[in-house]
Length: 171
Image 1 (cartoon, rainbow, N blue to C red):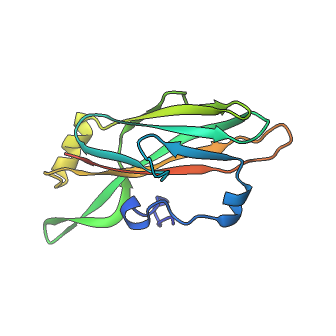
Image 2 (cartoon, rainbow, N blue to C red):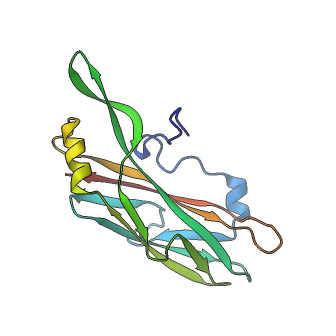
């Protein structure tokens, strides 16, 4: 679900979002996240101030190579001021963070194969100081989604897109 500011609702409010049964049945790839023995596709970033990493694997069930563009939306709560007091809002805002993927901006998955991607998220000291100046003196949520968007194959067919919800605490 997308808000007026074109960002999704908080992971804490909507989780991974709604699943499309049709898309699930037609999907020819799937994702697993390391450290999730129950198969849930989510990244638990924990707490602290160090950079965060998690790894996921894209599994290809077809006889053709698949290529996905990778991106991330990193967000946190917004702040509003009422009568001189800073108040946290439910509206999400973009959190400036450096996000890198071990495979670069895309990942290629061999036919009937799999490819592993490690995601690294780093919040700079400058961003942390700006958040503290806004009133987040004890820390703030780091949340959002990693997206894997399929590129069209030689016949123009586009496969299933994937998203991984992630949640952590900076502080």
